[in-house]
Length: 190
Image 1 (cartoon, rainbow, N blue to C red):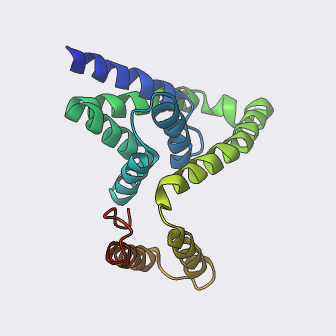
Image 2: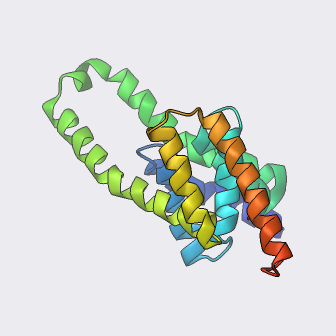
Image 3: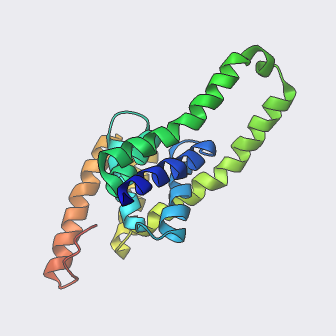
């Protein structure tokens, strides 16, 4: 019976998140961090980072992937499906309404102004989501240097994201091995 409560709870939580996930994936990460990491303490920042990392590597919409993976972690496949449905129903309904009234909305100054305001409000939410991810992404000081190198490779030298991820994985393994050899603990490069 507890699992049914968990599944229903996941559906309701993600339905609330789905109502306000403007701005794409990092917006949901910021909201999930506040709800599941800070308020409910159901997962750690590192676990949320792992979920988002896997969600980014899967095909499909990032937001749906994150919802499903978190729900699956909490309550198996029923939890994943409930979370996914909760996440997609609100925007689906909103999109249906907007599509139905498209001709009235497309030239409305009020709607255009509202969307401009939403975009401006979403930027800090996305920034907070990105900053929250750094808590789990940088377990060692050397990881900050690794992030700096990755930034330079991408923005200055235009290196493919695939290569940056591969180099990051190799550097993470090297950092973990060196840390274990020097007695820095068995955590690896988490």
